[in-house]
Length: 61
Image 1 (tube, rainbow, N blue to C red):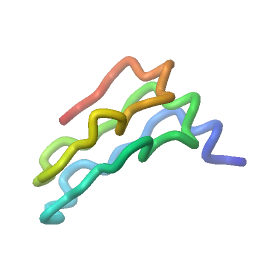
Image 2 (image 1 turned 30 degrees about the vertical axis):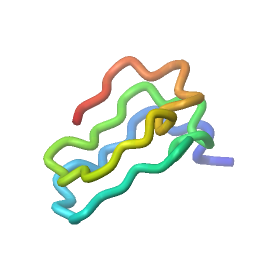
Image 3 (image 1 turned 30 degrees about the horizontal axis):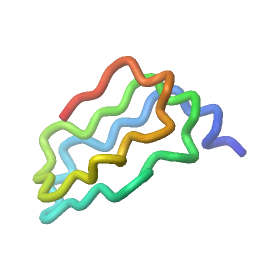
């Protein structure tokens, strides 16, 4: 799928409250290298939210 080729995902500054990022939320994005979640009101972040993101090099919270 096209999502599997995604390199950069910017969903920062959504100002959604509350924001819950669940277990393996990004599991279908194996090639993701940059994930921007900055400037969000993250209420809950599961320990396994980023499981499977082996190529992730930049994470903005």
